[in-house]
Image (cartoon, rainbow, N blue to C red; front, side, top):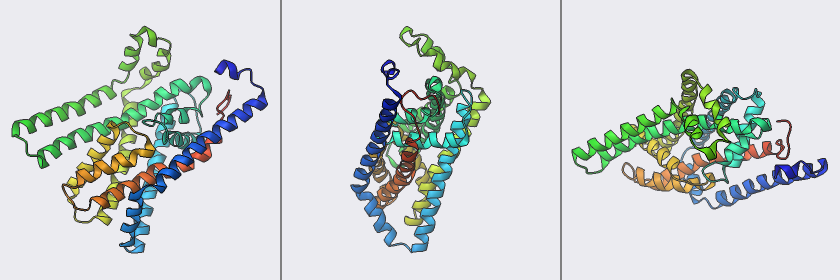
Amino acid sequence: MCFYFEYLTKQRKKYLNLFIKLLIVGLACWFIVTKVSNQKNLVEFQLLLASTPAWTVRLTLGVVVVMMLINWAIEVVKWKFLSRKIEYISWWTAIRSVFCGLTWAIFTPNRIGEYGGRVLLLKPANRATGAVAMGVGLFAQLVLTSFFGALSIAWFVSTYLPTPTAVKFGIWLIGIIYAGTFLVLYFNVHWIDGIVGRFKFLKKIKPFFSILEDFSGRELWHVLLLSLARFFIFTSQYIVLMLVFLPGMPLAAMVFMIFILFFIQSAVPSLDIFDFSVRSFVASNLYSYITTQEIAVMAIVSCIWFVNLILPAIVGSVFVFNVNYVNSNKS
């Protein structure tokens, strides 16, 4: 395909680039409009807002949106830090990369489009290596989700399910081992480079994974702490909305169930645009143990889904037009 592109005229490349951009934005808009218009839980959230003083609603939603902006700002910092081993990118390019990736992510399975959308703003020769570096950042986020999620599941089983003491002990042991395994794998991420080298059919892509050898323990800690800041913000968004609209829930149980929600969400294959269904179903079942307001819980989950994924994807659709998809020689 790339060989064919080399023989396209400059004018045809221009039109092909425009077609690809319009296709991406068109798909994103179609998915967003279709799913948001059919999102019953967002309607439920509007009803929830109607029963709350207007100033409280504005302040709460304002805080949640500001948290979203801080969250993605931290991701921009993390991406700029990860990509510096490959090439220098400006802060503006890093911002465009992150938001462009979010637009791609909403209509691709398991957010895989985020890789393509983000690394396309790197130089063509650096994109494959950039995807590997980006994977380090995503893995750091997964480590935290798995660590806190596994331990929270052990707590949930021990607290709410009638199980023998021996079973509870076994579940806690499994949870601790599972959480610890992810931490060990993360701080030895260079093992992946060695594993890829063991397979002959992967030797062509092995050079791209050599960047994993370059990450020091200190740099991995830096990435993990940035990811932890994002994880804290994600959690705080749920806490703020639940404290305001569902007062009276025990704080510790509320937080642990948020961790379980993140864990299950990361383990279930889905599209970002359909993610609210997974979140809503899991949240309503989890929180039924501590509240009878399952509809309100689902509404809150859908609100955060909209703020964290849909709004940034809309912003990212603007940046999609600044990317050259065919034979680009500049970012």
